[in-house]
Length: 328
Ligand SMILES: Cc1cc2nc3c(=O)[nH]c(=O)nc-3n(C[C@H](O)[C@H](O)[C@H](O)COP(=O)(O)OP(=O)(O)OC[C@H]3O[C@@H](n4cnc5c(N)ncnc54)[C@H](O)[C@@H]3O)c2cc1C
Ligand code: FES
Image 1: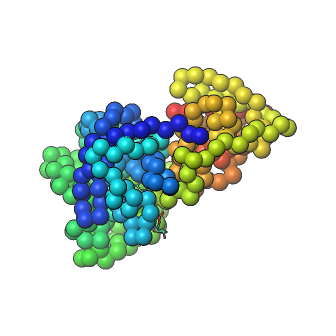
Image 2: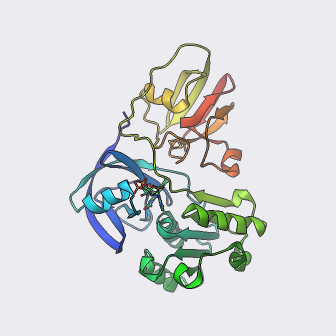
Image 3: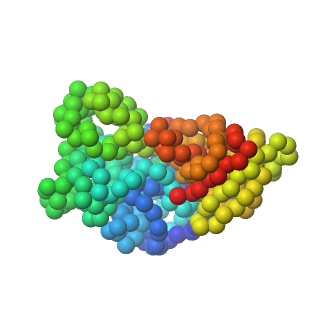
């Protein structure tokens, strides 16, 4: 079973009628844009950190209640100050490679959560320009409205927020978004419902933004539960060799060709990171230093990630006889 941490909730902050921030009474090492996996009763759900590791003393996630959603309702209805929650370590690769980059950010609804962490971190610890297009149903559903206003006032030369309210302007179309053409040289980060992301991706592509400058975070619900899963036993047979560098320690294992890398590592007692085990969340992302693997499923890594040698351990089988992997 996965090694998880138990953390006490310090505070629950009501952000809007249907969104709360859960502040944890613990210290945490994470990158802006990363997420935690929470045990929500019988299910597990991923929630992005809305705090900044550079600015905020305590980590927090922000959860928006989804109509008929199980996990989000469980958090909103059950979690109070003093509640102890089971969480997996911070994970994910929706994070700028440099806080000095110029950033063109797109968020819709709860998609602001990883994006606000990136904004706070880049404004306080970076030097670049940031433009945010933030879409919401109406004024009342805007999460972090006052924080964004304060940051725009404090950094007028570096930070611009464009609010898009569906109640006033309808849904954004690729044609509307061409107004952002002057900023298409920036690194783009997108997070929101699929139709919104599709429109933004289409607009960016039509303005000539290459795929490797478009970074996407998809808010899906896990269908498995990493807190409950057990690891399958190894099978004998044709094997490759894998060298793994994790947390400064090197390990070498024989790697059965039909066994996924994450399964192998967990079975060997290595605490490799993971969450969904479905190729959908990127918690298990690692880098190939030598050799080749094939992934059975990949719903999250983009071409730039693949070109950088990033792969999903939960979906990787060996292709070459020797593979070297490092966790960054
Ligand atoms: C990496 C990652 C980061 C995430 N970060 C956040 C975050 O910061 N904040 C946050 O609130 N959520 C976040 N999510 C989404 C979250 O994990 C859940 O998917 C979400 O809370 C819905 O779960 P649920 O159990 O309430 O709904 P479910 O019970 O899973 O779904 C119930 C019904 O609602 C539909 N549904 C699911 N999601 C949506 C949606 N977004 N809009 C409309 N209908 C939907 C489903 O199709 C289903 O019919 C993140 C997901 C991932 C993978
Ligand atoms: S654990 Fe989610 S992609 Fe591998």
